[in-house]
Image (cartoon, rainbow, N blue to C red; front, side, top):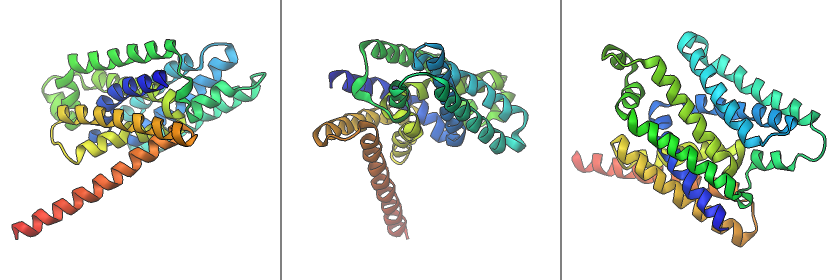
Length: 266
């Protein structure tokens, strides 16, 4: 339980930071393509005798670079090509799983999440990925900010948009890998985006949005783990239900408050 709580807290930091960028830039579908391509890397790693998490990391980075290059080169066909990468990655993973001898329970844990089985080694890996994400965002905060809100303006200011956009997608890929062991590949995009979306209802600067999204992610993961432990349920879906319920309440509350202020103004 202590390891599970620590994993939830650590993963919430990096994902709160990058999830804010994903929500602001509205690239949830793009992040989804990266996430589901990870299955190919996990299946190949398991087939070759490596740790699935290492395969997930390699596949996520490769998919991020490929999808980023597709978007920059063929934006008119972006949705179709990302969908193709998404489907191809998952298909490769399924084929490798089918050819892997023995019981593939370890890979099933990555697909559907089992945070209660997080090992000390995975905690250190999560901490290392967190430090990489936070370090790069801190070092290039202004460049990422410009690329997120106005790529053309950033290009006119001399920012190498292509390099920073691809680096940005690689950081999204690292965040996806952070969450895979918590809620599984199937639900990873929900936890990447929901805390940041809630934060966006209440704060109006990117820095504050990152901080609030990270704190919300910690609250959701901790609450979900405790509830799943008490009710003997899978932790991943419970975490997502807690986050999803909070998002609906936040959205309804924000809309009510907006209408009330508009009515008071008139």
